[in-house]
Each structure stands twice: as structure tokens, then as C-alpha cells.
Length: 89
Image (cartoon, rainbow, N blue to C red):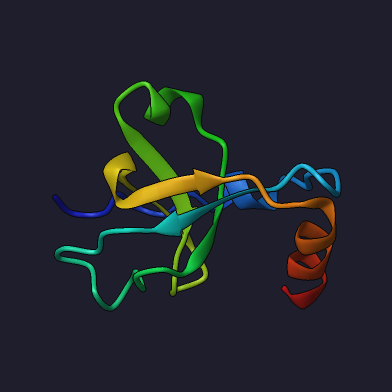
């Protein structure tokens, strides 16, 4: 499975603080240069892709791409950790 092309239009929309979603990479078959196991990635909401079993992630290239949802485990960050992650990015 090849990763889908980037869509910068999704990333250009400003999201309100405190509503970012994150996932941990649990599998990176065929994408070792793009995905690091156990790394936290920001999710870009994409309902149409979710319906197909895909998830849009900002990867190591700092672009958003579609990957199989089975490669990630969505997680909920505590408010303090989420704030620290947002400040670090």
C-alpha cells in the first residue's frame, strides 16, 4: 500500500487550541523512513478517509498523508501533556 498524496489544504486550516488529536505508531511495514514505531503523530481529521479504514497523519516529512488505520492507536492526552506537545511543535 502506497501512502496517498499530501493535501496541504487540510493542514492550512487553523484548529482551535486544545482539540488536536494524536495517535501512536504501532506498525510501520513498508514505511520505515516515514513512520517511527512508538512515536506520537498528529491526526488530521478526514471523515471520508476514516470510512475507508485510513487515517491522515502528519508524518516525518511534515506533510499529511493517508495510512492504514491499523498502523496507529489513537490516544487521548491529558490537558497538561497536550499543552506541552502543542508548545513543542
